Length: 345
Figure 1: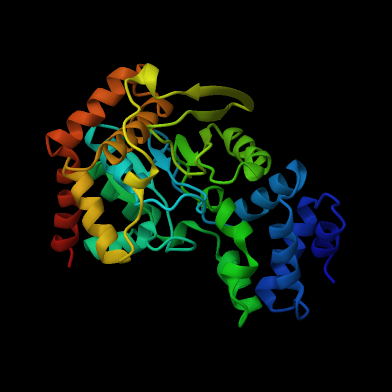
Figure 2: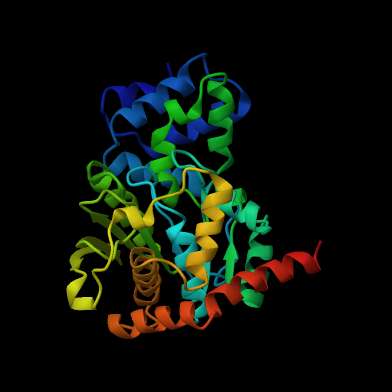
């Protein structure tokens, strides 16, 4: 059994050379039968400690093609860990609203893992193809103020692990991959807002956030009692902020922000799957959503503006987000992306 697997099972920190050896063997096809499955099972049973997570992320970073320096440092990303409260695509809507507010956004995401409609499923339905390279991502960002990065941002080792455990289902074996997903994407935005559905993962994700912050990124991890992987406008949200290696914490409560309308049912994803989810998404983006949806999207868009240092005034950011929905500017960003897609068809 490879030393990385043995160390994880024994809860011993995995050093960087050990991860390098594991990935080399994965690429060469030299892993013994069951080693990839044992690695994923161990990671998913218990989130690794700080040292192991840092070396894991470092080992993947050094294998990927880096993004051009400076291309995305002023942009922000919003992406959740999945699981928890089943909602419509709040983070995707918030990304478009933030872009309409003048906040450059590079959003990452994936296909549905535990939900009925993941961000990439929604984009496909909307006729938007995620980008396939850093250069294309930068070009779309320059033209539209927002870009949806495709699966190329994730390390190829993830796909190789999925093939190595086949015919076992990665969704059952590797929830760790989905939970850590927001920190596996290789687009170095200046700030990232990540909702954490399961508080038990907060410590481990905090280690991942501290690793990302060492490279100059501001990372917010948000949790709430409703178990959603996004900020909610009708309950208190605790935000753990990581920047320059430091960790601070603050609370976003609805009433002081002039929020508080609605309930979880107003965010529920329709039972009809992608088609109904898309219809609800467009309804919200057109400014016709219920109070829960409207205020929650505005709160998440405002968080992108504040985390990205476009403003420090939450009330101002919330007003700008509401105006982006009311005026149709958010929907216009979506149409701009669609037009770009049609022009290159």
